[in-house]
Amino acid sequence: MRKIIAFNRVSADGYFSAPDGSLEWTVQDEALDKAAAGRLDTTDAILFGRRTYDMFESFWPHAVDDSPTAPAPHGEPRRSREMRELGAWINAATKIVYSRTRSAVTWRGSRLIGEFDPREIAALKRQPGKDIMIFGSGSIASQLTAHGLIDEYQFVVSPVVLGSGHPLLSGIASRVPLALADATPYPSGHVMLRYTHAG
Amino acid sequence: MRKIIAFNRVSADGYFSAPDGSLEWTVQDEALDKAAAGRLDTTDAILFGRRTYDMFESFWPHAVDDSPTAPAPHGEPRRSREMRELGAWINAATKIVYSRTRSAVTWRGSRLIGEFDPREIAALKRQPGKDIMIFGSGSIASQLTAHGLIDEYQFVVSPVVLGSGHPLLSGIASRVPLALADATPYPSGHVMLRYTHAG
Image (cartoon, rainbow over all chains, first blue to last red):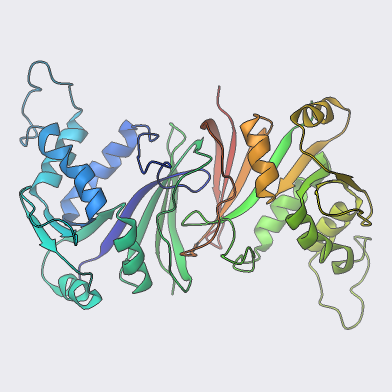
């Protein structure tokens, strides 16, 4: 069975995005990127809410040359090997996009879906394939959580107080007990908390 | 100089209290209580917003016999040694209460203050005495944070998704970079994240 893994950055005071919805308060961390790159082999699909998809689509198709070994073109910022591997993985992944407003998606591997249906996700998890990631996408992540469809939560806590902003999950009527899988501090001050379902 | 230490429980999805403001989703953890009891010697005062004070006042004066060695009275729940030590410390501590609505406070050691004034807090920190705790009290904790007056944040992340609720800090205009002091996982799945000011 394919797992769904939610990966998110969160501030020390529990905010997942700034008041304007942006993630520009997050700080890059090469050690974190290395750890993330090491997990790419076991995942091949991404679930997206519309806003997060827009954000990714405006960056990743142009951010990196798809070939992990390509040299950085003149005049472009040099990307780390991890960034290029991540970019190649994102561009190649199956991207399932929930949107009621967009009529088409052109980024390679994207598939547009109008309405969230938990049965469709349960069927997707039973299909052959690797594990499935979801980044941000609060509305979809909340619905998945409410239906018990997220198998693993990876929260990277940043050493910063944002002081205002937005939560990731909202409108969920009942609590979901989790089991801590591991807590990994990085030299940068980031802490990766990894949870699976309890019991 | 006395330090101000903010101690809070937070859910894995970043909520500090349930939609009704309660903390009844938190789970007691004897190992955490032991660690907290070990730090009581270095603190002797508590800052309170009105709502948190009300909550503490309805529980602690009656929860424990003040003597740490007293046996549990008949018919009352048996409290752990750590709970009794914590209760004795809270009842004895100087309690500084911010409220514009209460006209009097009768719980031993309490002092009522109408308006938050950062200069008064800065003066308090220069006075002789032990360190000062603040639990919850989001409005006061936010104003202290905005004025750079909190020296240490202790966040205990619970292994639970609340799915809705309230943040602790809000309305703070600029970010506060922190330095991770330590990240301590407990067998229960709690993780204590301890931060000091960066730089």
